[in-house]
Image (tube, rainbow, N blue to C red; front, side, top):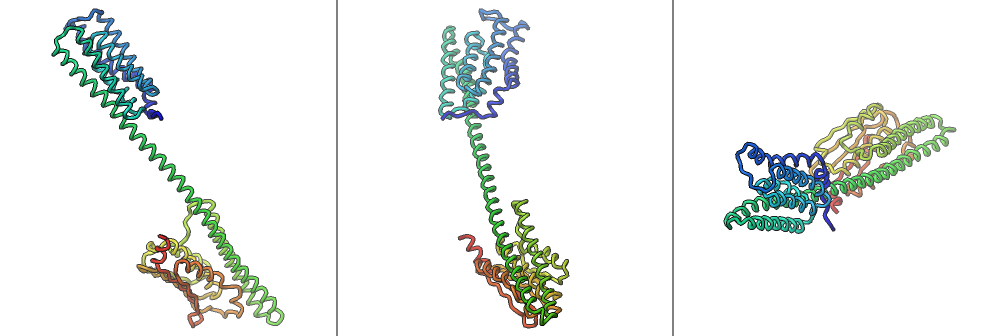
Length: 418
């Protein structure tokens, strides 16, 4: 498979501005000093052709050599050979080899294009062929003049070293450029692949978050709606004989309905966040102040105390523990209206302990207050069991309630590695 020249090299070589700059720079070096010397009368003219003809043909050769670079982008080998032939025309056919030396620079540019567009072995082989061919032509021309052998050898060494060094330097730089271009292309491709992988990972995360929210909606709806139905049934049964208890149950129904609406609103807010912002973070223990503020605005006396660095808590543990605190505050609001609530979080080197405790309710609880409740705690126990953690929800013996969570980090990290 043939190697293709770098798009940037192609664009540069095909630019008329680039060709014009190269032509002006070369023609000034080739013709500047000889022309000034001739017109100042400080030199002799040995060529059979008039000086004006030689200068004109040399300028045209420089122009053609610079224009050949435009071909180097698509056909580097013919372009390189053309620059070498045009150099030999000036050096041999016009018999002004000293003028032609600056034309080596254009040959080096054509060699550079060759090195970027062809495999290393091919580019080096063509460069060697062109340099050797040019040296043979120069040697043949110098020998035909009848000059002494030492002068011929000196001329070949001087001109040959200059031509070979610039030519092979151009090829080497072209090869290096091609290697760097291929590395850059691979890096860009890797970046594109990583971007696609990241997009796929975000989409998987989005799907997983949707599933989590759907499960949460199911749990919330099941818990609260079951409680509402049970309380309504109990109210219907108690109303004829015990109207006062029925009224108290109606108050429980209203409270249950308010907290059901708040829970559903929060879950639906998460769902909207997932739809609108794919990478919206899941709340965790670092958001406890926001959660506590939510309940303070609704009249709850809640305090939060954190001991340890929450950043040390694994993400899955922190998010699930946040849900446990959320459940504990929700239950305290429903079953201990007006009671103060304390949230204690302790982060040790190897485990997390969270406790949500509330005092006794400021008003008596009905005998039916337990109806339809407990589904949220069961869900928490299942989640923490997967992390080898425990959930304990008990009466503290004074009418208050305590929800405790204990999770060892080592178990979680081991399960993540597995």
